[in-house]
Length: 146
Image (cartoon, helix red, strand yellow):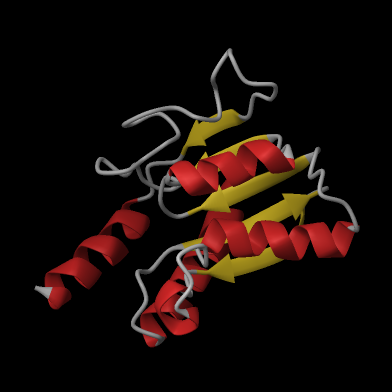
């Protein structure tokens, strides 16, 4: 099932490409069913918070009619930044599956680890998938930009 859900997140990331957005996608899963999905829309919306993870969390909260996403898993193509890691922490997502690390602003273990900090009130399990397609999508996007 993990491969299926990360591929669904990749579909979202590819939607970002059509909008000339950084290709990052996320899906939120509860009881093995996708309840929310999103992709980056920062340029489209001109909103610094319009990251795939934040948009997916907002959608899941509406679907569940709760800000608490306990029992939900998130699959994301790129390691979340500090803002997104904070949103994951605050929404109480139980497990996070990451396609590839982000060596520049990753906040789930590569640069810093926001969601597994003993000084904070919630702990999210991290699962690294190291999906080659996630990495290639981003590499190709930035190569084309240069």
